[in-house]
Image 1 (cartoon, one colour):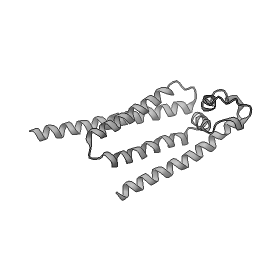
Image 2 (image 1 turned 120 degrees about the vertical axis):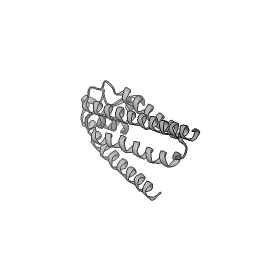
Image 3 (image 1 turned 60 degrees about the vertical axis):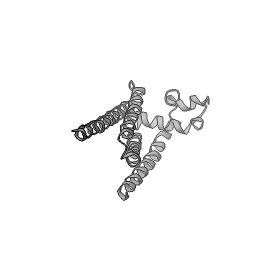
Image 4 (image 1 turned 45 degrees about the horizontal axis):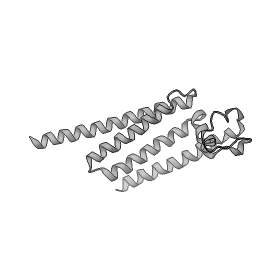
Length: 159
């Protein structure tokens, strides 16, 4: 149990640090008025008219960082998936059907996310697309592996 708690704490710390760095990097959108129309979906969602950089939603900082400085947003995604994996393992390690469903749901979420950013014109969008797609495919592989292991154990018990 100790090693899982340690992994969870390291994952949380990595997520927090990468979130603050991505937020800081994305805050440069306030100085780049040319991107206000393209990188501010949350500000538009809240129907806020941008007259200066202070009108931009803090959530849009992450969009801007993901588009132009993708390293720390990518670390945020990977650390979140790692935290979910550790917590999911601890909660459902003895329930194989739940494990298959957990990994299948995680893979669907990641593949849908990659579909939303499929045709991104920025390098950051393309990098995040590939990270999301690969993580989704790995989650599918884990779900298939667990289901095959369960099938093998079921066949062995019946023989």
